[in-house]
Image 1 (tube, rainbow, N blue to C red):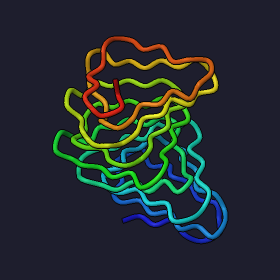
Image 2 (cartoon, helix red, strand yellow; image 1 turned 180 degrees about the vertical axis):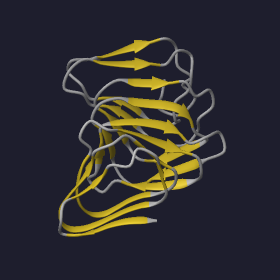
Image 3 (tube, one colour; image 1 turned 45 degrees about the horizontal axis):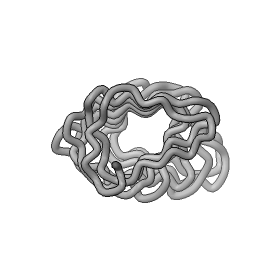
Image 4 (spheres, rainbow, N blue to C red; image 1 turned 90 degrees about the vertical axis):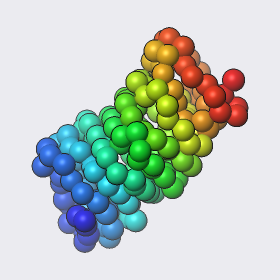
Length: 173
């Protein structure tokens, strides 16, 4: 586990794979200055996180994500077909969200402010997906799946849906 604590500014500059990440800041900002892979839990207990323009890839293993106000810039969800993930509160992705593989994604909601692409053929779970951009958004389904929670469009500029989606959860039709 890597813990970010204290009141000084800190940054993640390592472009590789990181284990459990825990943020418990009393002041200062943690900046994501590199693209990296998070292989387990991401827990934000307190503090300011600046994702800058980073791409974070979530890989392997069952995990918990506790955003607690933390936002991601680009997020690639590549957990694997047997990995379950629990999102404890609103997970905001400022730019693009790519879902490649997941078994279950529960709770949430997951808020996408940019484009969304899925290439997962069998994701389950009850996570809500919200499209909340300030400009026109694109959702690329290409015949693949999304979590079974409610899908909400909260964007007056609209969302363009590309391809067909597997909508097999309550409230997705």
